[in-house]
Image (cartoon, rainbow, N blue to C red; front, side):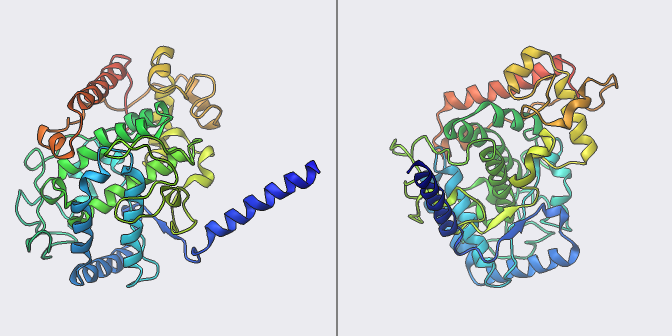
Length: 392
């Protein structure tokens, strides 16, 4: 009887898995935007221009603007944006069956975002100084929402941007938060806001999805969520919506009405996409490769340098990294951390704080934001005092 019962449970789980997988005959791969060939980028440009000409950028900007208060500053943030990007991706697939939203590995460019090749004329273009972006993907486009205008950008330091959050800090956030609420809040108060504010212009408004940079940015945030989920948080949903109601897997997403649970697993249901370098082979990779994708030697160097930190700082900021076993409790990737070779790299730098206008627009708790900002500065101070050198 017990054997039959176990077999029944296994069969039921298999049926659920097969049911979840329905509708995913075409699972597309989301890739780093800089890995796309010129031909692939040209095809993406064609699809995106067609989408704008047919009114789809207006459609998505309207949704994001209308739902703004429901999807920021609360724990709908990650599942809503995953569903929203998938909606955008599905529309793109009406023009090209293999269309997939790429991601921008922003952590790799965090020290000097304005110098990123992503913001060159060969990709999405650069600064507009508060006026029209004059090169790259959306040069010459008319954005329709909330009224006809050219796409605007205004870097937060004029022709430069403040530094964003480092791979090391985001890796620390991922390790130190085991609940969705804490993970979401720390990401929303850090990397999410710094990219929007750094680029500025349309990106600093509730209709920020006018700028294709929005989709690159949120695909990367979603990729980080996918990575965090693979660390034992596959079905972790907690926290509350904007009205204080508790959230669970059955809670309805703003605008779409789908249950949050329908967004939780990539490659199943309607989530017919995966990230290149995704969770299937992740356990064998080095720790910082899980967060960012620089050259292998850079990631290995970062892992090595982290493992040299004093034990008290490892416990404080990287509780799953230790001198004996390296990252993720047993990966072989940093066994070389005890080698006597001298570390090389650069001192950590402070990331830009959220502005008062941004905090007000999102109705964030200012005290919580200030606490998060102070923690980020403390992180930099601690690593610099310990003579940690970043290869990023």
